[in-house]
Length: 467
Image 1 (cartoon, helix red, strand yellow):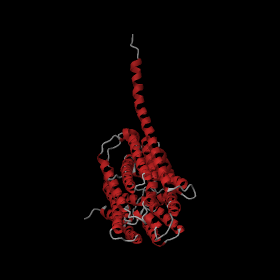
Image 2 (cartoon, rainbow, N blue to C red):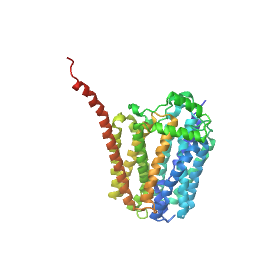
Image 3 (cartoon, rainbow, N blue to C red):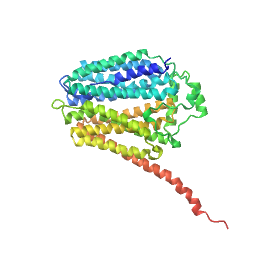
Image 4 (tube, helix red, strand yellow):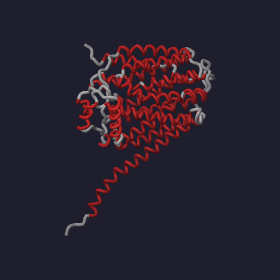
């Protein structure tokens, strides 16, 4: 007889593959600015793309609560439907207004990703968490890489117009829509329908992918655990929690989690860098289009996205074999790699050679994915699954809030509406500031760690021998 976890995992993998299989994605900006849609650079960059950021931010928290209340499956169906609406509008829509509506539905689809990564933990045993998480994440990366590669081959080799890539992407979304309907309905969730065993309540660790299995944190400050009284209260209150009880629980967990200095440091980097990362990948195609217009030259965006995705996955895998005391060197590593990211973005902006731009982008994505893997593990390793969901939800919300502020000021036509090259100069400076912040944090931690040692030596040097 087959394993009970296998059926929902296979369905989720099928769903994840076809959702992320988007041959048009590497060519979205050339498609919108080309003869099919005939939109201007200002309309695409300053009026259409920002709507995704705004929608994602507004929808994230309500969707987070709705996902748990509705027990994942209905939200997965909503996500699949949102992808269909998004790409149907992409095929048909022409005006700026309808494109903004498209971005709203894409924001809804992005916000509901929490259901995809949370569903499996409610229907399989904890002993299978690591395996199924690895499957689901790997398949989505594979779908994205294959989609980008197919798109590039169709454009470069078969000379297929970009319009047909939008049709293929829509068909892929329609295939993905079928899978969630056959998923079993979970009987529990993390907050509103809490039915976990006492062992899970007392210390269930959030599942970690194979690529995230690094050493356990050796800094006692990074351990967040529930006291016996807290666990008893949670067991009493979360069996059939209402909205008010859930919000109180979330607030209590928020205060407890972010009082931990180590978790706070990794969360700050996570939120700050994710904001910058999303800005760069959202507008990279606009930069490439400015450097090498697709109307005049052959472009290789699909190959770049494929290679950068695979490099990122490889970097995340390699870091699992690196033995580093992240409690000691974490902030310094974040500083150094943030400098690498800042240099990559700066080179993309200033050299203005498409090959330098492509190479810098691939290194940028690989570096970010390596660091986000480490950050994910460092944050999750000592949290219960409920707190894991809360912390990553808050980090994502803060990242989106910062991204919204950055978008309104720098990108949106209602703000400064800066030229794309000036935008990327600002993004490079933004990552440089992140590097400085974590250099200061590392120096402060070094000072703090050495200070008690010096203080402990004082009594022995000042003690007067007894007469």
